[in-house]
Length: 103
Image (cartoon, rainbow, N blue to C red; front, side, top):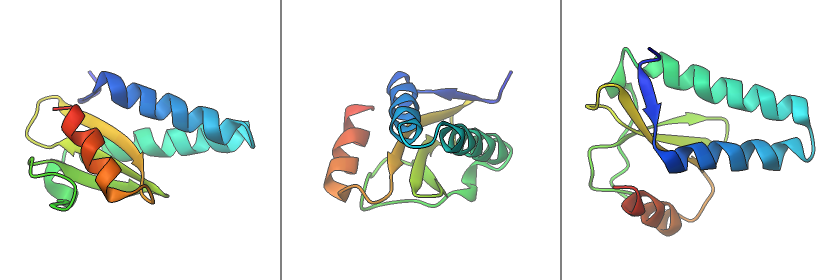
């Protein structure tokens, strides 16, 4: 058991991210995806390590950053529930709408 599960649309986030980076550098795409999964695995034993983002959601989600990406997850879920992987420079209103759609 990996200790975490991905929201179905979080899979899409990761696939989109990989596809975008791979256009320019497939090896870099693999490294970024590995870093994202390593960060998720590292937060599983310490789910409250991430920070809250009241500007994005009132839900008790936490966020960790990997490079320019925010990983949003539900720390109280077992296994840890990864809701979204979003580019951190995206408009906060759009990020909030994405998170609302994944309740």
